[in-house]
Amino acid sequence: MLQACLFDLDGVLVDTARHHFTAWQRLAQERIGVTFTHHDNEQLKGLSRLESLNYILSKTDQSFSDEAMQEMMHVKNDWYLELVAQLTPEEALPGATALLHSLKASGIKTGLGSASKNAPLIIEKLGIAHLLDVVIDGNVVSKSKPDPEVFIRGAEALNVSPSATIVFEDAVSGVDAARAGGFSCVGIGLPEDLKQADFVVPDLSFITIELLNQKFFSH
Ligand code: BG6
Ligand code: MG
Image (cartoon, rainbow, N blue to C red; front, top):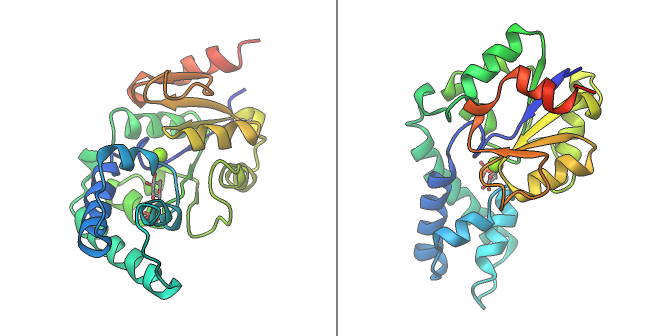
């Protein structure tokens, strides 16, 4: 039986990628002097803040001290937070809030498994914090996806086994993390991008508890 669902945040519950894009692009142009495209932004899905900065710095020959890198991440995050400050509950992605409500109503546990250090603020702004039984985020994990740590810690905190838990992910690294941890995984996006997912839907409005039980627990 389905006992729990673990959700990635960015790209699954909310579209924050466009705000990450704006902030990283500004940093790349104003502070580093390199271009940053939508294609680049796609590569950063699921990566931590430091991994994202390292990706951008790989475009230049200049070298930066640890201190300078910390400052750049700080500045980028300030710009990102200015954009995220405007988030409202209406900006939760289609189906996200409704699915969380129906899982709660059915007694199925819910959790967040995200690389973001801003996760607590964002779920508060979306008005979904009370619908998540546990939040495992970039403030507590030591290993980034595709390492399964974030989801394994989520399942442990909920006291459920990975085999009774479904992960929802939009990033290749996140799908790989789920599989490495022994979880079933529903991809959010395009099937051609998320080949390792058990199945892929465009967004959470396509998901019902009946569908999950039928796909994963009917035999
Ligand atoms: C992930 C996003 O969820 O969080 C990445 O997909 C982002 O793009 C990462 O870099 C870290 O986010 P934050 O909010 O801690 O900078
Ligand atoms: Mg994501």
